[in-house]
Each structure stands twice: as structure tokens, then as C-alpha cells.
Image (cartoon, rainbow, N blue to C red; front, side, top):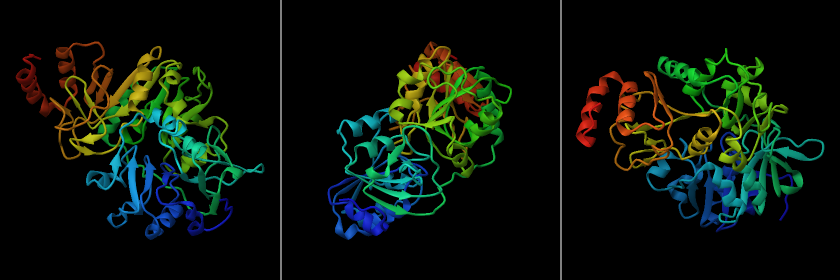
Length: 426
């Protein structure tokens, strides 16, 4: 079945009961196609929705449509969190780097991919724009591709190129891409960012996530030289450093001179920056997040976050106790890649307490909490109170270092708990 330019309602008629449907990630989630598919719920049964982090509404997750749509998530975003926590949707823990091979090996075959693409160029090629990540593998292997063609989607160099002939139905829309709200960096985030910046060496290759702490760290790198970027995702924080030449990729081994990422998410500024920009390559995370790729670059410095960390370095990053909160993502991909890189540094950064004053440096992880990064993998833990270097340290040394960066009001309690649980005096 091939339907070229049509309506969203007509396009989603390609979807049949029992199909597995992939939804384009992050800011590229195709809202009109999602709604049109949901509107067909009376005609569909047992359609499996596969997604990672998506922005926008998820109407198919409504309880009324449980007979029509089941949901599996590789990452639990804010719009899916409540649905996963109450059992309407389900979370698949997996390294981000391994997902493309799930599709390509047909261990998880995709029937239909719903995507947003750029306006085609004069040769009929469109771009997956701001989200290549796992989406490239999905469109490569899906039996049918249904696309929203959106003039606001940037045309980006890299893997995410698809010819119109590969698209079975397309719908023209003109909608702004989803944007992330950029909050003012807090004093705590500034302190953490300054500590992180002190660990970054000239010539380092950076991997960073999203939010106040990565942005704060980037803001303190204005006196650095010859930095590179090879990262799972990029956002607005890199732009000033690229434009001033601080990020130039001159020391990278893989794709020197290029900013390499799996996807971009932020404000309109980052989408404009990556549009037709020859120094930006957005690529399949099967390549970007592959430890073998990452480790080739010098001084890889990975900056990731956590929900809580125990005194010996076990890192919970995707759940609050038994409640799923986010996902494994690429944290372990880059922590291992950074550790194996010559001169590399793996950094985990978090405030010492939550906004509700709950400690995040804890004697033991909460009951049911999942370990994303093991204590054998951690190197540097950073809070607003300093840096704990745990690599190759014994348990007593680790506990002492972690207590030194905990909130001052938590330190006496932590010392007592260490002795009670492990008979270690710190």
C-alpha cells in the first residue's frame, strides 16, 4: 500500500490490528499521526506501541484504549511516567546502544514507523532532523513508514536521511517542534557545574545530558581549548562554545571537527543551529553509544546524573524505589567508554539533596531501587560540596569520600550507618 500526500486520518489506515508501531523520539514525535491513530481505536486491537522518550500528548495511553493499544517504553519520560507506574504501560530496561540492533536483527520487528521529517531537498531526500538515535533503525526496518513533513524540522547531516520513495504515506503539517523550557541555573547547579568544569581538561571529548547541571558545567568552560563533542544528546548549551571555537573537535579521533550526537533537544535555537550545519552529524546510537566508538576519542569526559547513590558507589538512575522514573539510557555506554578512553573521566553529578530536602547520598539504596551503574564502574561523584574520586578505592575510602560531599546535615547520620551496617569507622 502506497499513499503519498494525504491526510493523517487516511495515512494511519495502514496500521492494522496486531501491528507493532514505533513512534519517533523526543521533539520529533508526530502529534497529528499519533492522534489520528488513537482516533481509530474502535477499529484496532492489540497494537503494540514502541517508544523511547517522546514529547507531547500520549492519548493512546488512556485506560479506555487498553484493548486497542499496549505500550512498551525503552525510556520513561514525563508524559508516560504515571502510566508506567500504574501498570498501563511497561518499561524495558536496556542500554540505548543495543536498541537499534533489536530492530535490525528482527528480534523486535517494526511494522509501522510514525515519524516527522524535514521538507525534502531537490533530490527527494528528507531528514529525520533532530532525532536520529534509535529512529534511524526503525525506519530502515519498518514495513511501512508514515511521515509528517514539517518545514520546522531541520535538515541535519548524518544517518537520518530518508528518500520520499521509502515513505508510504506523508502528511504535510506546519507546527513548531517541541521545545524544552530552559530554567535559570540555580546556585547549587552552578557549584556542581564549577566542580565538573575543573575536571575537564583541554582537548577533552564531551558527553553531557540535559538540564541545569550540564548547562552550568558548559558555562564554566569558556577558558578551555580544543574541546570536542561525541554525545548521546546535545542541547543549547554547546552553541556558544562552538561559535567561539572552544568546541572545535580538533583532537577527536572519530569524526574530527564534527559535533556528533544521537539527537538534539532544547529550544528553537538548537534546532536552527543544527539545520544544514556541516559540522553537526546526528547518527544512529548503535554507533554513537558504542563503547568501541567512544573509547577511541581522547580524554572522553562523560557527565551524567543520578537519582541517588549509596556510600560505596552504587548508582540508581532510573527509579525511585520500585517506581520507574526514567530509563537506563546511555549512561553505562558512556561511563564505560569514558573509563576506557585514554585520559577519560566518568562523572556522575547530583545535588546532595532533592528539592524536598531528601538526601540523595544514602547508606543503602531504597528498597526496590534499580542499579544502573555498578560500584565497579564509577569514577567521580560530584555534588555542590565537592568531588569524590571512588575509582580503585576500598569500601572505607569510598564511604569517607562520599560522606565528604554529602549535605553537612546528613554526614553524622551517614557515619553512624556505615558503622552499623559494615563496622567501618570513617
